[in-house]
Image (cartoon, rainbow, N blue to C red; front, side):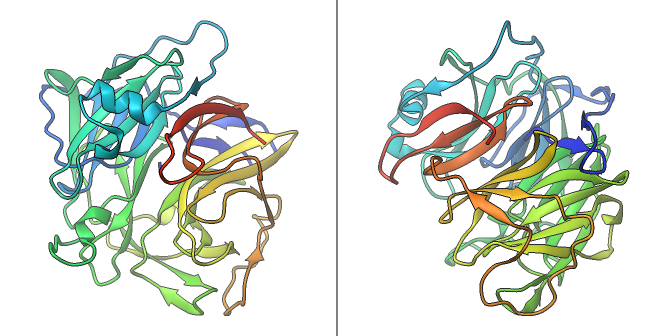
Length: 364
């Protein structure tokens, strides 16, 4: 994940955006060479952040897409994977949709695509409008800047998985900085970095550990899969989700280079599951997290008790911590992002072999 991160004051006050006033003044004009398709998100002023896990870099790309929509925005595009494939001159079976991100200014949806399969797949960035128009994001002679991670996970070809593909597992712009989750080559491999934006340099990041109640152990090598930012009593935190599915709060201020950070596990949401995307939102005066999962549907998680909840530090049999409900009418959701204050946009398919649909929904 991914996305437009929104902050909340004290989880009970007014919704306020965490976008700062920074402008990408350090960008230069030139070509961008991506080697792999990764997570995407938006910074202010229509700047697209595009992760390249293979190269362990993040590109900040000035899209120029800064015109607000005329009237309300909605999406209902069937067979979007087939339409994308046709625009790229291939078939739906030959593309992978890696991530989506909504431009909070224009409300156009951007898509990170891998054209082909395996390590030689070609990365492509696309923009989709509510009308269904598909354009390729310009990567030549464009204003941009690049952050290179100094200690990414080593590349090990030939095994079941290559750790380098998880050097960047999620990114987001939060209060003037870009937060990067992934694996490093450190002994405690799970890593979170807080990079100054516009990019100046990238440091080693902080090693992150958490207690996994379902496993009954402290884990240091499992990366954050997706996260969202939230504010409690004026302090910024990340709400981070891991495989199998602990939910952990981590103070952003603790993400200092070379430090070791212990997160607080505020929920265990069930094993044999991988979180895919999450957003934080407010409805009827209450704050929630909406999280898409690989095998446990879409969860609406209440954050009402997150400030005072005790962290999980003992082995549990099933679920514990923050309560949630499963949104039964949201099936097969693979990608999820905020569209505006009241809507989300989702990419879903009813079965693994079915065509994908890009639609907007009311936040539940």
